[in-house]
Image 1 (cartoon, protein in one colour):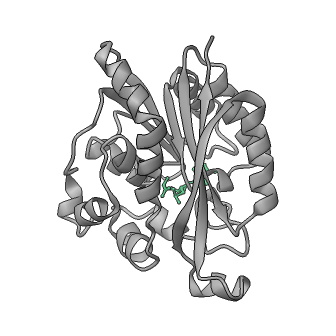
Image 2 (cartoon, protein in one colour):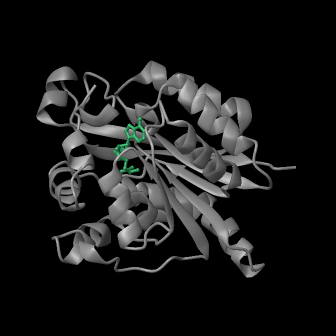
Length: 254
Ligand SMILES: C[S@@+](CC[C@H](N)C(=O)[O-])C[C@H]1O[C@@H](n2cnc3c(N)ncnc32)[C@H](O)[C@@H]1O
């Protein structure tokens, strides 16, 4: 367990100090740059392939979609999916303390965006720069009653939930609750999640089974995620990259 309740699998590098920094600049320098954290390139591509056409059709019908980024950190994957920004554009936007003070992009469809994370500073940043219209600060594994109500409301009312490089931090029963709450919501809805390799494969298997119990599988792709840190290269000899499986699931909502 690292600082502030973030639980990291022991063979995986922990980044807790970066998640609780005041701005996303350390995230950009030490994760996006140093580790070539390119996963949003692919999160965006999969979102564009399997969710964006549907979201645009909803927009044509005048709908404003409820978009939730679960364990959002500073909102990099919201920038990739809701704003359509690529890896380079996110790095450029977060290049220094001044540049990160506003978002250099526009939402691609009308949405009410909610960010949820244990990091109060990341949520304050997301709110301040307008990435998120609402935020919930909560330890998803042990939320206080009021936080739990806010998380449940956001998830059950969500049309789109993204949760990337994040489910790995959640206990199996938390994953079950998150998935069931979203699945119990009304109307068609989509969830984009991803699984990191080579970390915690048994836990990822259990998460996949939980997702498939309550949601329909739509599609997936395998990609690079980021370079392994020196510590991880010692733990996984011969490996240089962490790989990603990106999955999209659907709530039929009939
Ligand atoms: C790697 S970041 C995810 C950022 C982004 N989604 C991505 O794919 O790059 C993981 C986030 O999970 C959050 N987190 C970890 N444990 C959590 C918990 N128990 N409850 C809520 N958020 C948690 C961390 O604070 C961090 O912001």
